[in-house]
Image (cartoon, rainbow, N blue to C red; front, side, top):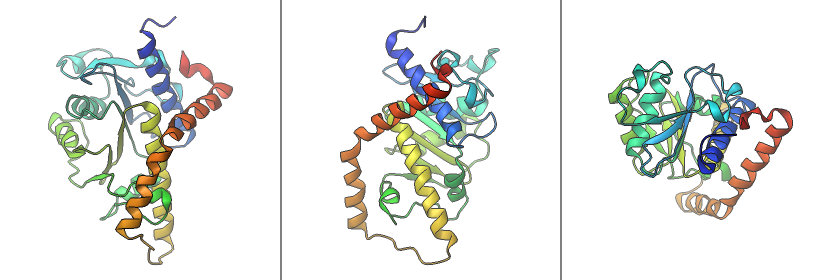
Length: 246
């Protein structure tokens, strides 16, 4: 039986599912990258994946319970990955909308991050989903394992929940695991569309601002799809390897 209360345990299960699904979609990278979810109202107490554990093996009970203001975290035997602590500790301490924070380097989104202009242009309904709804950080300061870089990343979020990190990867925040995961899912699909469109060498057929905004706003009517999608993805996991729930 889980020792955490029911609400925290459900959050652990959902976050563990997100790790497994990231492997399913091939967005993971060795034993790096990291996802977290706030447990406390102020966001400073949060769950985070253990240092260098492959996403395919993460279970609900494996997740670390940390506090952003605990200066001794990195001195402990089970200390998290330095870059995970740097990014997630800083963001959860400073960005109230980041109840859940998913940071990874999915292939197509990361390819966009290597372009001089990594913006997602509204060329179809999926790319238009992100019109004026992403922030782009072009101030990459190297491996994010120093306190100052973590604070800079947290500040770069502003009032957005999706950040395209130039020369790095992407970070997606949300109020629940399902909603954050859905944005990550469509962000990578939109990036794939952009990369494929760029690869043709033909000019992009970019929507005008009014049409792009209309299309982006229309996605709000489908917000419930995120919950349905995530629940069905968990059912898929349950059929193959339900150990993420342990």
